[in-house]
Amino acid sequence: DIQMTQSPSTLSASVGDRVTITCRASQSISSWLAWYQQKPGKAPKLLIYKASSLESGVPSRFSGSGSGTEFTLTISSLQPDDFATYYCQQYDSYSFTFGPGTKVDIK
Amino acid sequence: EVQLVESGGGLVQPGRSLRVSCVASGFTFDDYAMHWVRQAPGKGLEWVSGISWNSGNIGYADSVKGRFTISRDNAKNSLYLQMNSLRAEDTALYYCAKGAQLVLSHFDYWGQGTLVTVSS
Image (tube, rainbow over all chains, first blue to last red; front, side, top):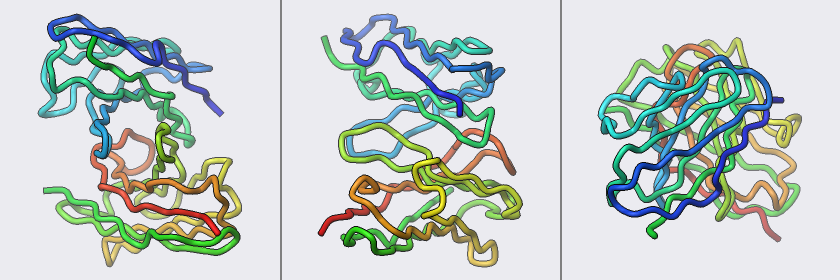
């Protein structure tokens, strides 16, 4: 099965900061990667799919890049609503593995 | 508006069975794959099982293979997860999620989850 890792596990940042989260796959997944945002007590929300495609309605400050085994989620200017946990997910194979998550909190 | 509403969770003893359900609305149910994803208290997301639009492709996480069975009834816009031989480590919030395509894809909508607690 494909394993996913994320770094960092926790990130402390301030409003207005540029934030980058990295996700790595244990083998190539082409561009079959999604990013989700989850706030406490809420269901996950899709942000990015196919590594770099922005889901409809998601602010343009979110962007994704990468292919193969290394991917990044970037928030260009962190807003108060962005403090949450972010998960990457591969869907190259029928195991749909999630990364362990990156919690973005207030510095 | 897409809606996914899970039900059937509750407290169950180890070794017993439980079936959770998800009713979908707001989209053509039989055009999309569907999935179950769980989240143990304070932990991350774990994909549990998925089923393609026509039930022709089904997959399970190794942690539930042989114990859980996913199914769907397209006439009722419903997704099910039959959970047998439940263990304490199956305690989690179980989310129903819609695939964005017929088979392999990301998940574009999620329900609010149903809580399953396995304890004596």
